[in-house]
Image (spheres, one colour):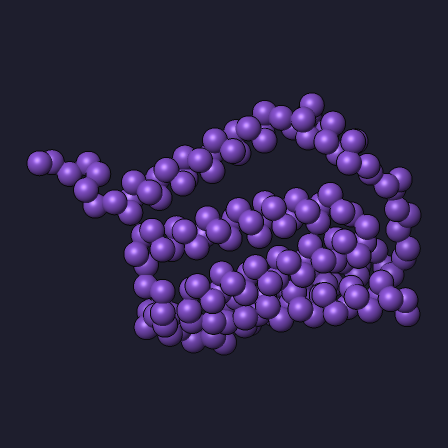
Length: 167
């Protein structure tokens, strides 16, 4: 077992553990912070796999933007931040569905690959990925940025009770 394998196993354990804490905690802000840990561990796995560009995109977009947007939305809408009484639902149904979905996906992957080795494609460079993003995918990229801006403006408008009220 190499050092990369040990690092991948450790980061995978951190990612899975913090993902369980995200869905298992009763406090919304803590769930957001556990999500930061989970996404950071995934970015660390990308670094171990020598996909530096994808790792930094993971950090910038998901950890830096999405989680911050989620926390701002929670705080701007004045949602309850502490323990919520309406989240007291039986967990056995969710565990059954999640476990069944996980076992189904594991069986699907085992059946699809049959423990065979897959040849890796030639590694991508930042120049090739940047060219693909800004030539082929520039319109969806810009549409997504406008959509995120509209969601942020909508969250601000919804959080202000004085907007749209008649005088």
